[in-house]
Image 1 (cartoon, rainbow, N blue to C red):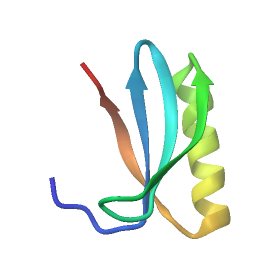
Image 2 (tube, one colour):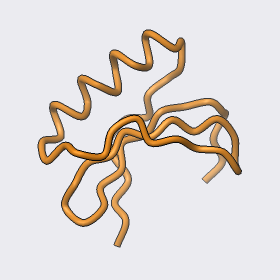
Image 3 (tube, helix red, strand yellow):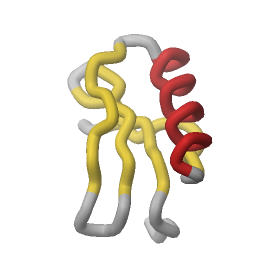
Image 4 (cartoon, helix red, strand yellow):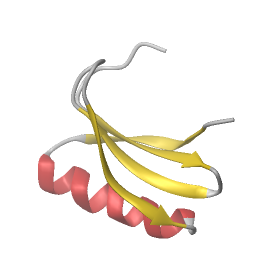
Length: 64
């Protein structure tokens, strides 16, 4: 999947939602890794995206 950097994406790993800031293909940084609720993680992603001026990808990525 080709994406323009930087962006924020919500990822689900082992039942937890993680809000991750992707700076480049090789550099990414978790903002939070403790949410069980998607809506809470979405609110954090939107507020951090607005603060940093970074777009938030819709939905979330699930790690199997």
